[in-house]
Amino acid sequence: QVQLVESGGGLVQPGGSLRLSCAVSGSIFSINAMGWYRQAPGKERELVARILSGGNTNYADSVKGRFTISRDNAKNTRYLQMNSLKPEDTAVYYCDADLRVAGGRTAHYWGRGTQVTVSA
Image 1 (spheres, rainbow, N blue to C red):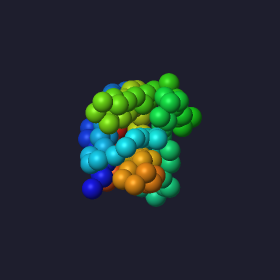
Image 2: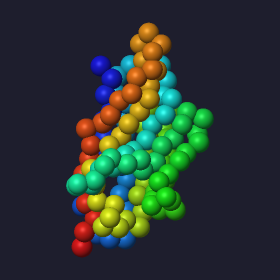
Image 3: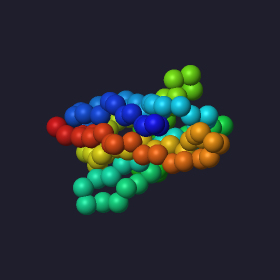
């Protein structure tokens, strides 16, 4: 069974840093794309950053220059380095992935989410 396992959330002061990790658990053929979304209370889920299989990345305007998405293909893991965190970055962060799985089909997965709270 394929799952996305997230880690790294927590409480941090404004200006601080956190690194989120998302690892693919289970048997897959390949990762087409993986990324991070976030959802703050009372708001819709929004894209934070995504990285494609070729290495191209895209970021929300609100995090450009502060957040960096990276990957370790050997570990089927993606990371989100978050620097200069602001209170408005507070949200539940969800990992997502488009994966090629058994039978050659492509399937989309969500992680369970990890809370990031930026507060003094």
